[in-house]
Image 1 (cartoon, rainbow, N blue to C red):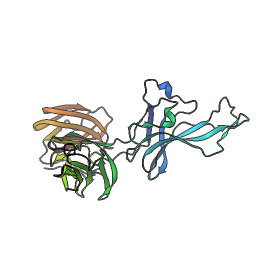
Image 2: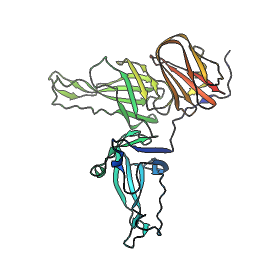
Image 3: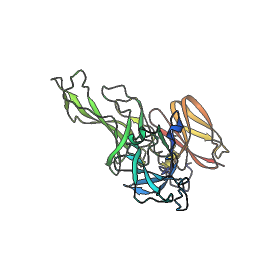
Image 4: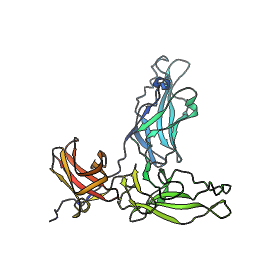
Length: 362
């Protein structure tokens, strides 16, 4: 008999981090040392700019008029903001010297040169390497790496059954469709009529979008060959390549169901699935866990042999705490070392089918 549980829905929400961190990743980190305050710091949300979170470095500034020139260099405050087209790391002058050798608030609203940029169209500052600006490149050897922000939407897998550019790529937000973000592959689709037939294969534009009932990966034929051996522009229809029925705000992480052309598609940088109690207690589930509740160690039994699957455990914030690849198994064991609370087990098969179990740790 199916158990009755008090909650109808557990939503594993996309986590909006309040802080991001910049580090310097160079062979000689001293070459990125600044004579005053440094952008290598932790940044906290200070408000919004152009509809997205703005971040300010956490360094505390002293702009006292009693400080002498030897102590008071020009003090800069660093901010990370979305301009509308890219993310920028900028410097703002707060304190300055004057000829009387006193430290005073800056007399002009100086918004210094851009120090670094990242063109990823993400809701939060994008994780990973940022492009150091020409302003710094001549004097400093900086390679800014951001963490605590947002990973880009990325597809991995294999698509070997067609000729043309591949959907295995990183995707950026290019608009909205049916109330949710529309993502387009970063590859530039070229349709140069001067290409010969030998070099002009069919080229596709790939999109990830919400249809209203499921997430879909689609490919639209943009360029095709004609008998005159030239590459011409043509919208030759859209093909559904893969899908995922998880009702999430962002595209769901994990394996997607293959519809056409590809062998496997796995998405990362999106959102963990919305889990309902019905999802967690499907009668046809092939997964069972014990002991549950547990003190940490768990055995996971499969009613049938599982091959080429992914096992994940995540907390109620949607943060993945355990990831394990299953090659061929009827049983797996894991240990949850995190504090007592509610966790969720997800097993995703190679065909995209997913099974969930709720785990209680005492």
